[in-house]
Length: 162
Image 1 (cartoon, helix red, strand yellow):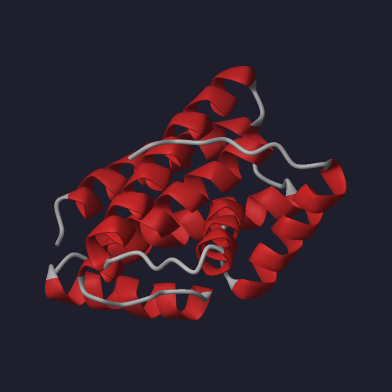
Image 2 (cartoon, rainbow, N blue to C red):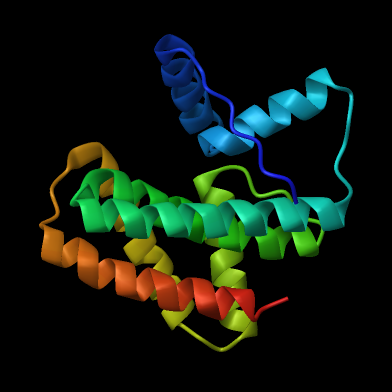
């Protein structure tokens, strides 16, 4: 997959983040969807799976870099995004489009039951706590570090699920 970066003026970046949050997307997801619609293009299911995998990997790399720099608030959101996209990848493989947090949670519950692994739900709850930390900045660095370890295990586990 080819990666292209787009630089937006601050007001558009802010607006994109707000709209993405309202729609239950991550900013890159929403921008990609807008682009597909404006180009009158549609991804086939395999391309969508690849897109989610690439974004999840990107977010995980960025989260680790942000942790090294001490930016635990931004890292928290990137860990959440990497987790959510890993779940969406599996959903896309099954022909599902998971847009809102509720649909992610329902699918995480399904995955946990199918795999007889309650840790999937527990780890996704940790990811959700990191998402909350992005908005509230209430977690100490050590808590984010411990959570990050759990998120990496979750993502590794999700990579092995079809």
